Length: 139
Length: 139
DNA sequence: ATGCGTGATGATATAACATAACAACTATGA
DNA sequence: TCATAGTTGTTATGTTATATCATCACGCAT
Image (cartoon, rainbow over all chains, first blue to last red; front, side, top):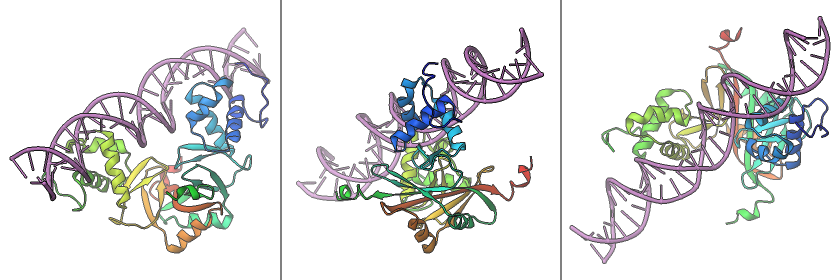
């Protein structure tokens, strides 16, 4: 590989992880794995598995979240975190707001699960229209 | 086409919609669009767009729901409905429980959305382990 | 009856998303 | 040196979803 001189956004990250996290942070928008791939080709990353590997590692570290309803990924607003989040997503411009869930919130959500399924992981995504897109919607 | 004699589970449904809804109801499990496709080939449905069209129509009628976290579809437990639901899903056996959301639940969820995004649609999926799979997990 | 519009469906092709499987390289330390 | 673990590279393929255009069946106005 080349470019061994790049600085990482976090010393614990590997080169690929650093490149991809930086890419996501700069984007400030959710990106698909393949959109990321396009952007990091210049950094020497050129195959889907490389991107997915780094994304999975970053998700495990809590530094990246996946938006299920979009098949897309966003950098965590909080750097690394082990907390739970919901996401609000503008259906028009894809703006994403990360919503930290309080313990009460989480308890409430988990409490919705029926007895026969013990809850482990919550996916909560709220789609809507952001304030900037509201005028445009008057079609 | 053949099989014009089939009975529909609902008179308002087209032939394809009826076949696919029946398939999903019999499955009692979430199915991917392509799994559905395999099962309805004998009914003369043989291309992905046909399946996706019928699924989209059925979702609009509230008779089918999509599980975002699985890329899969389930028949609504309640026939047609315009209500909102959460889903609890066993990560091991894929059993799904539909959780009707009370008005309070919905208000609470929508209330999580930040000011800058006015909420319209909530996706809430809770993954966990169902009671039948709990023993098997002691690996 | 003819011809038209509409809605449903059929069919082809391709886009977009994701992973399995294996090879190669690097660094560390016995 | 050799083994090992961790990371990355590479090929190939699997899976999910949609764009696009063709066709068919039906109702209906002329």
